[in-house]
Length: 92
Image 1 (cartoon, one colour):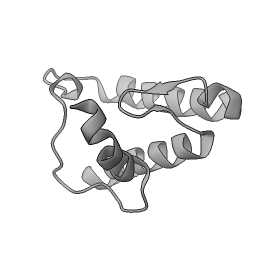
Image 2 (image 1 turned 30 degrees about the vertical axis):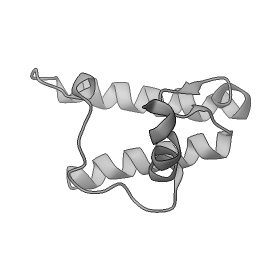
Image 3 (image 1 turned 180 degrees about the vertical axis):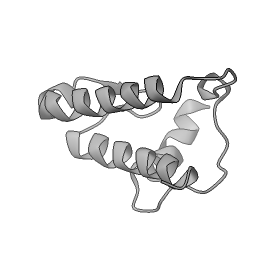
């Protein structure tokens, strides 16, 4: 199944179009408990900082859950689209 969906998911994840509004979320990513906003904001800032300071070499060592190995430019595009999607989702 994953092999069948991979080409389609690749175009969605790193293609030029923005993520669709109200797209389904995998159950293990859903936040079901109340979270501390300031703590979650700091976690996001730490993750973005860690990603951006790691450089091309670090990004290319990480395998994407669906797509496997990505070039640093593909990782950057996927990260941008994902963060932009959630910022728009919450009106930021």
